[in-house]
Length: 173
Image (cartoon, rainbow, N blue to C red; front, side):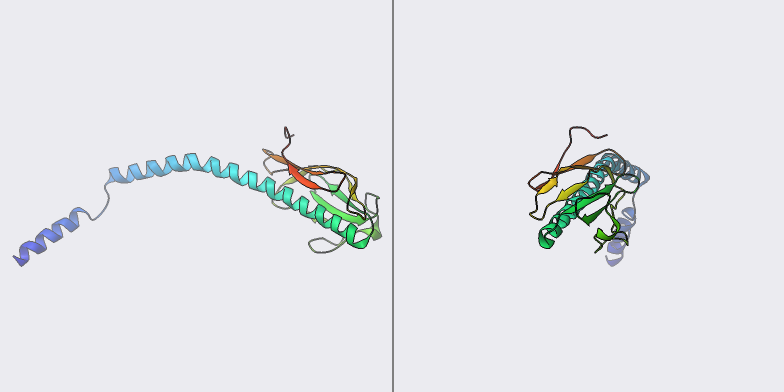
């Protein structure tokens, strides 16, 4: 009786010891279908996040320049360099390009005050913007950022009141 139970148990174990070739082919087929559907969706999401991150970086830089203008009681201008440099810097005063001695250097800037836009995103439109000591934009404008694959872009709009917001343009270049 004991031997019969061992034989039944060993037979059941050997019958379910692995997967058949058919089962493995079906599994690979299902995984490949899921990957074919999911990968383009992931790329689209990644590009949208890249564009959004670049726009938020520009907003943070503009808010910093506005804060400097208010706390120091003097106008601050933002100078941008578009593709291929993709960078911004601040200077006190209303003159752009920034004169040598008036350039703001601080956290995340190089020796010349430039902050580089990271993640491969590009600044494709970057007018000089100036904030007064009251925080209003004496020179308002729209900066446009674009993701590295040029499939999406966002506008960073500075209104004359100094309000900064991110908008979606009608079309991207």
